[in-house]
Length: 266
Ligand SMILES: C[S@@+](CC[C@H](N)C(=O)[O-])C[C@H]1O[C@@H](n2cnc3c(N)ncnc32)[C@H](O)[C@@H]1O
Image (cartoon, rainbow, N blue to C red; front, side):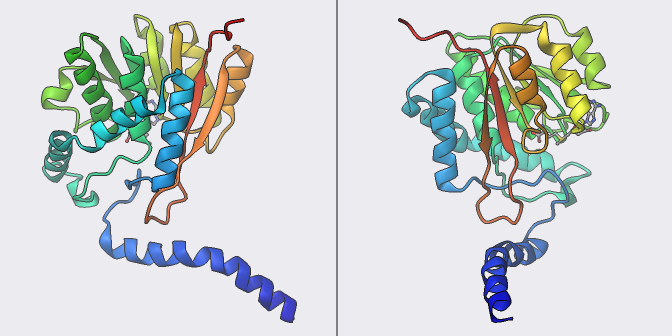
């Protein structure tokens, strides 16, 4: 009995922080899904280091891109205003936080993609970050287009104004939209129907449309191994970044990263 009590104290000690945070969140947040938060500082640095390794650049270059999006006050104002004015605004928080999407942004800045596809747009927060990256790339002479897919005709209300100049949403079932897509995709982000079979079907559908240097980011890799499976089947490398939210009860999603790498020089 003494041992049981001692062991229970150890186990429940780990649960105390998320439970306290969840209580606070009940009163401080209005979100019901697709939660927003910042990354824990060390977690943010791990993400930067991992992306730098995948795209083979110095971590300082990736850190610059991350700081750039974190300091993008115009984008934050745009998201806050569009959210407040939408009919879903009552379920959103006034403070704009990007979570792991800062990693999507850094990839989009580092890779300078000609075509980005994001399946599953929801409000359009990811869409705004990705088009903001394309906006910066364009200013540096690298043009690119964003295509988001969503089955919900009300999705993507944040993709407006200057951000909408860099892309658009293809409404309807994602597999159908991907099948009809023209052009070579340099950055593909899977975040739509989160069932394992649907996710794999998306990879199979987009497979032939990926450029040689294409990077796939999976937003479902904390739930299924399908991106790993697809990577192994197609000779691609795979890494997984586990997101750690700061001051939030949500244990975090992740970013599955699938990429090809040239063999090291001999
Ligand atoms: C997790 S949310 C996407 C979040 C978004 N990527 C972001 O950055 O905030 C998933 C979205 O996928 C959409 N979705 C679900 N099934 C779909 C399907 N079969 N085809 C296209 N979109 C789908 C939903 O309508 C929802 O908006």
